[in-house]
Image (cartoon, rainbow, N blue to C red; front, side):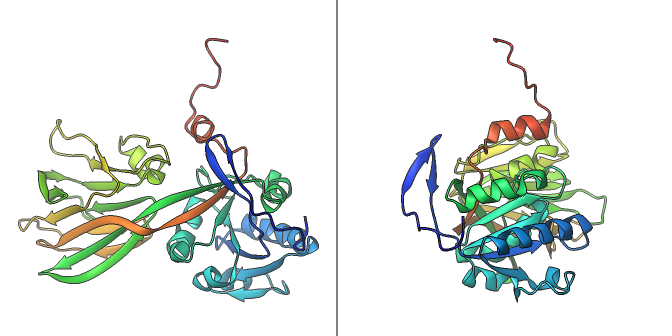
Length: 314
């Protein structure tokens, strides 16, 4: 399908998920740095899309690794202003970085997996051209995922801010000491805890670090946040799932002898000190993720997590 093809404006339902056909003409390409496989896939995708007549815009850093590409270059943030679709080639971490830059713009993102698990980047390089063609012809599933914002204050003054699609994590940093903190949800005191920290996860992040810490799997359509303690110094401390609109506040205990960190998706880090307040809320803007029509959350879990595939009842 070429860029001059007819614009579809029809909305319809596919397996209970909204499919919205759009006309993608200006397509941004982002790739993970330092990977020869990513560059190889980018070259293949560039050739395919140029031959189909699309206007491509490549992220400036990855463009430097492809001399003679002949494409318009842009920062990731600017892609949100000029692109109708952004394709991310790499792992889930690459997509997470792009999401934080592009969430406010509302531009949809599509992931090609060149990483390991690939819960978010769900197009295989072996299916690259066929799946991309389907999406560009209007056959795709669109999901809206919410993000979390974190604000850190010291003596009432803001000292740090971050955004995460997967999780916001309070952790000891390089120290091996426990952290003492108080937890409040919607202004109500929940508990005081000594542990290695706390993972505050979205449904998207429930298949990531939270899962490794024993947290629950949350379906992506849920409006919920999970709070998962990390090695708590009590056997009764268990994960809590709260409403997605809840305000979560963590107060770092004055008696701590270490300076912990608050990390957003494991990529952006904010140092905190005893007495600091960490406030976490849902971000007003949602990110739009595009998937092929074959995308299925439970099938992805079976494949990535090694769940049994054979029906006992058949």
